[in-house]
Length: 204
Length: 204
Image 1 (tube, each protein chain N blue to C red):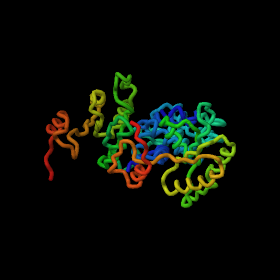
Image 2: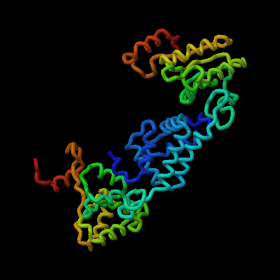
Image 3: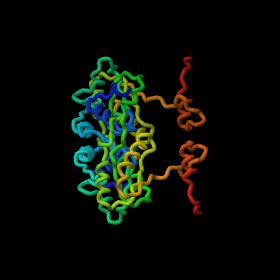
Image 4: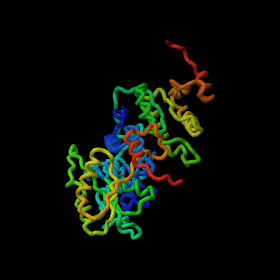
């Protein structure tokens, strides 16, 4: 609707690019573009530069696959982390979410996706070889699977389980159940069923 | 909270830049940064490039002050627009909003701000001379003031009125009143008062 009166192909292109971001519509994109237009030129160049550099210069930790500016990431090289536990996740986002809980002190292993034949993602596209290489070193005692409960997640978990079987490690999976603060009546049957089956000793 | 685990200064800088955008918090900024990280490098460079070019290459219409890639803008050069009416607004956003209504066929004049002593903006900082230059040409018959009803807006409107007085033009202001669909009981007294005072012949 706004499009016909942009009166500038530059503005139009900037709005088109901004509205390609997730959760950003035409209206918000225009607001962001006009905001950038109001900034000093150096600021806009810094802004754009930070995004270009992010993609161009980012490196990944050879061990866990986390973003890392050079070499082994701060998590893997932190001497206070428990090197005998490795939590396997799909992506960087999951690492940040788990770190944010402050409840985990082990290391991570980012797969970089999950097995999904429909999307053409097979085991060879994931960092599974890197995981078995880590286990080969004999330092790891427990592998925690923190994958999604989708069919793809379950498939990946099963595949990993088979690959890990030959190592002397315990394979665990994160607990599933009704979330804190969630009403039982609104929980789906599978989740509530899992919550009941996996009930634990009550420690008040 | 997330900050301590970014593990990459590049990611941290990108998130910092993205969260400087209006309405974008740390969480959204991270989501946007990870989205960009997932894109092919060319796409990120196109994205960043569009923003840099927007600021670097944008030009403004010498007549109305609208963004324009070269010379007089499409609005000012459109032969179907009524050149005898000029609507004075604070910013580009206002032009887009008014254009979006499809109710106005005249030209615009963007002041580039309003008189605001607190923010150090005086009449000399606005495109007021450009407005009187346009009136000098004798083509304009009506100047429509579409400024905000804030104290700064009223001050600017009064200042403009004095500047325009010497030209043979009618000065009008956009109508104020209770919005369509708004309940009378929730309208503020000033707005409702204006609506009653400016009542018009009912045309069913």
